[in-house]
Image (tube, rainbow, N blue to C red; front, side, top):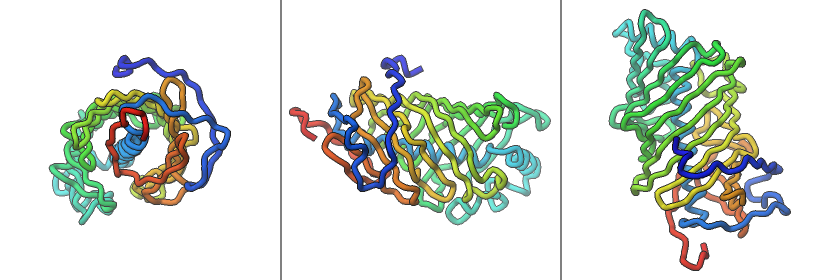
Length: 310
């Protein structure tokens, strides 16, 4: 595991009060500059962009393996080649530009578990929200999600989302409540400029709305908590912890609300605020210098000046 790269930060959870995007966070909360090789803006905007990419990837996985109805439909369509699940008969085709969907294949013995679903996005598959996905996702399903302890193990082959390549493994484990999912991530990202970022962490995702409509993603609402340990090829190491649950909806490309605290050696150096529930690509981050608005997906990669000024 990549967490051997650096010690696990102490599990200090600091609660914040929700705020609007243009307000300061908590006035008496101490936020301090730390030792980073890149500017805080670089670290924050890159992390938010990476998180956006991972959430998009996990949502694709949920679409094709999220319920027993979907898994059964994949089996039926693969057994009937005239119903090419990756094409016009894909029930999720409205999610993709011009209805051009990934090719979907399933490998199972007599329809029993374990099952392996392969999503092949080819050289480029465009979502209606403009996101570009390429490469292959492989999902190994151990049992129906109604079985406590059932897992989805996700791996990648030449997989990219919006020019960010992803390698590694995600494991989702379903609890007694089939809509509560424990997630471990052990991932490596390569940015277009060659920067390499590793992420090791644990999350809990609760599917709070939309469970009864598996073929309609627009009414889905997910609540996400947890933490990640991050390191990059520029020499930065830090922890991020969700201090107000993140909310992801099926009808929005972006996380719509929640807060994430970034720390180094238990010292807070930034807090990301995803907003008040409005679907947009705007978030803010707060440092010791104040609150700044930024656009999710627009990464800044600037090194710190020698004197430490931003």
